Image 1: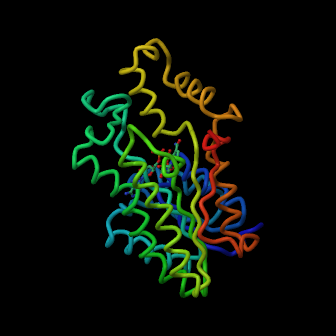
Image 2: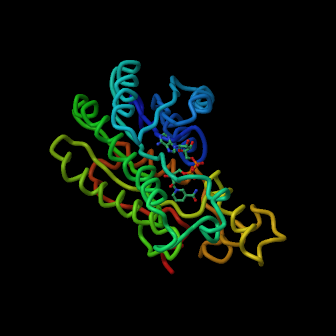
Length: 273
Ligand SMILES: NC(=O)c1ccc[n+]([C@@H]2O[C@H](COP(=O)([O-])OP(=O)(O)OC[C@H]3O[C@@H](n4cnc5c(N)ncnc54)[C@H](O)[C@@H]3O)[C@@H](O)[C@H]2O)c1
């Protein structure tokens, strides 16, 4: 058990990648708190972990809400040792207006100011607000570990998901700043850049591609996703939430005590191309 006795907060963990991270934290002995916009699902996921766990609604893009949530977790568990900033994604891209192009994605001229702000808020402000709220608790424990879920989109240029890419590049930069600022407190910060995972986010994207791209119109969204994997992933397989969770658990353990400020891709080699 790499995380025995630790308390881990995972944001956006009601489902998808965050739920996989929460399962890996629990498997390694941590007590887990799940914060998500969807409080009912957060609670259900927490109850399924088989360890002492808590799940409740919180919008971690809002500074005051993030602070209240971290204070509540610390009061319930006696402190916080680990923060995983996983909340992110964005409005269901499958439901975006056709004017926004393939899969609801837009490029520089296609973004409205509202869409730009929404992406930065969901993917970058969340990371800052939750970190600001959690750090006093990590410091009170004499150290801790933060993992930020960025994306391969933060490492590569994009001609469509411009705001998302910029936000995720911002998460990588923010990770390095966090690592530098809090190293004197023995708080480490690292980023993980996932590749292609079949979560609600990709389900929405593939539904949008089916509607808008003629060659995909006869295919099921899942098959569209698998074709993207076949064409874009050198290892020819999709990534799964536990792939991200195992690395997050390792980075938060004492085995990683000298690793900080890094961004590590879990992408089957996508970024080799
Ligand atoms: N799925 C992929 O292929 C992929 C690839 C790279 C990076 N990512 C990143 O991984 C993370 C998880 O994505 P996912 O695919 O599991 O998506 P998902 O939509 O399945 O889950 C995201 C969760 O975050 C929650 N959330 C969103 N904004 C929030 C907020 N302000 N406060 C609290 N909770 C909030 C949602 O309610 C949802 O439960 C995101 O940061 C995403 O950008 C995903």
